[in-house]
Length: 208
Image (cartoon, rainbow, N blue to C red; front, side, top):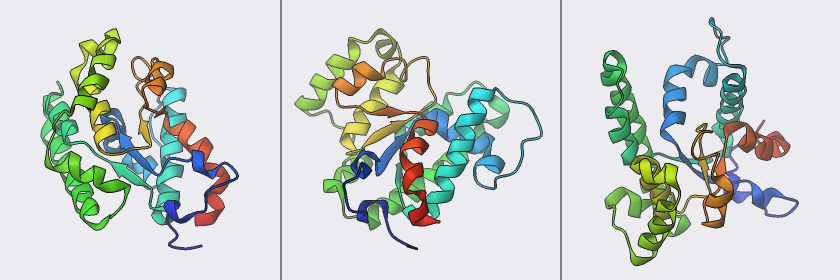
């Protein structure tokens, strides 16, 4: 079924549980930059990495391989640019930031071509304005100590809501994954790449 979008697949039999628009955490962008040869090319890494991280990277490879046809919407927040700019690795910061800007530009172009999700992505692109509803959400997020200390994660979650996303993709097990049960009650679905691949894998044959 070449060219079929994930949003064109009829719901039912559990498919509705597969998110179609995911906001990428900054750590995912770092993985795409640092391990692109594995994720995009399927090449074997020449150095050892943490086995748990390897599972997530291999899942990203499988996801992006399928997405050549599935056309899952991966959303990049402009806030990611600011977070990357704050990295302490001065040697790689310039090239990494330039790469993230290129990815962001690609996403903004994609938004112009997509007339779905109620235009929520356009809201993220044009402005960051907290409505009374979003202010209430932020108040709830501030009750979580880790998010109170980390404004970037908190604002990314708000952009998740503004961008009408279905899930937040991250490997941040210390903060976002740790609090995801509580975040789910607030309407935020947090997934690791391996968990997203578990949801997507039964339907992968549609795009192979």
